[in-house]
Image (cartoon, rainbow, N blue to C red; front, side, top):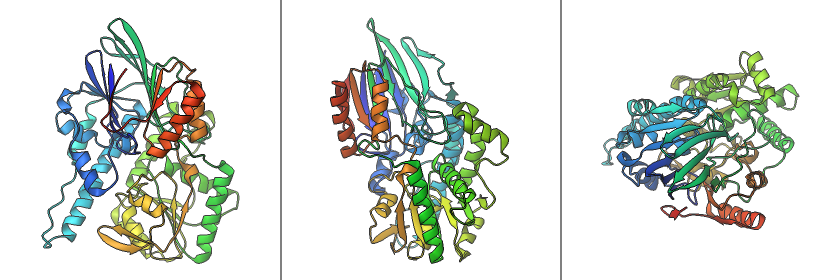
Amino acid sequence: MKVTFLGGAREVTGSMHLLEAAGRRILLDCGLFEGRRQESAERNRTLPFDPAHIDCLILSHAHLDHSGNIPTLCKTGFRGTIYSTHATRDLCEILLLDSAHIQEDDAAYLNKKHKGRGISRIEPLYSKEEAEKSLRQFVTVSYDRPLPLFPGVQLTFRDAGHILGSAIVVLEVEERGKKITFGYTGDIGRETMALLRSRTPVPGLDYLVMESTYGNRMHGPIADTENKLAEAVNRTRRRGGKIIVPAFSVGATQQVIHALYRLIQAGRIPKLPVFVDSPLSVSATEIFRLHPECYNEETYRYIMSSPNPFGFEMCRYLRSASESRKLNDIKTPCVIISSSGMCEAGRILHHLKNNVEDPRNTILIVNFCAAHTLGKRIVERVPQIKIFGEMYRLRAEVVVINAFSAHADRGELLKYVEETDGAVRRYFLVHGEEDQAAALAESVRKMTGRDAVVPRRGETVEL
């Protein structure tokens, strides 16, 4: 039995790991890599294995850094089953189709812009048709329901509490007369998330591959987060500016809207117009209604009693590109929430292009941005940023509120390690930048007395 770390090793995008056990090749996640454009294109288009030789894919959750390259996997030869929770499959239906739509639109925009300049034509990574075909290979599984996959291999999903449908993957493997229990966390949710159920402890694991996004960072208290959000909104309003929020359509968008609603209800911010400029967010919000199994009791009651649980009086959801373009004509303060969260694709690029050079405006970053992404350069307040191949001065105020992240922080990750009851023989820290993963590994070693390593991309480990 062995595991090879093919993506999300010493980095926070492109999660993909290959487990070879009981004579089978099991892929854990197949995410899009986001970073330097040329490197991203090469890594996403060229998978580091023969897809035809993968027996199945197990998907931890729907975020594109874990699911976004599934259409490439399928169109290049994978014919096996994709296992996920019910909510993850429903979210993937809109996320993967939207990803294909964005790639096609961005390619068309850039090809039109570069026409006649002698620049090679850009092709999307995959088409909407290819994304739709990949969805036909999904088989959904409920939480806490063991499912035999192959002789000697059994799968169970446990709630990860990260986003709707997110799961911790537990594989029980019998091989050569020995039984090994292998765990893969995907992304672990926070204990204080307002909407979802808390993550489920999984005792009795022999090996654990665990995320480390915030391996050496702590989130601030929720009260401090809302104070910072209120101050940013009020400060921008006084300047007469707009608040531009790049946010993932699943999870972060709903959290931000929920927080704005609470602040408006409390009279702490004015009733500014709030636009959610993402067709995906509209569809995702509808899917949120369909999966009560993912919510804590308070949220469940709220959703069942409200006709529009994540909207409020001054929130407007936009689907069409023409509606999106009209936001450029607004000259008064407002909030515009748009995807993607790392500012690598989608309508957010147009909003940034039109607003970053105005010092009255605020760019509000509410989720983790990986190295070499446009979002990361904004977080670092680089004086000039490139959007659609052209340079723009970053003159807008930049406000970063990481506490909206759905990722567990350092303290919560260590608590999760404690909840595994000390039986784990070896920990593998992934989905974290090298310094974050290394810091968490050192803490895990001190706390448990067990081995904790930070694997490199392409490294194979015998279990």
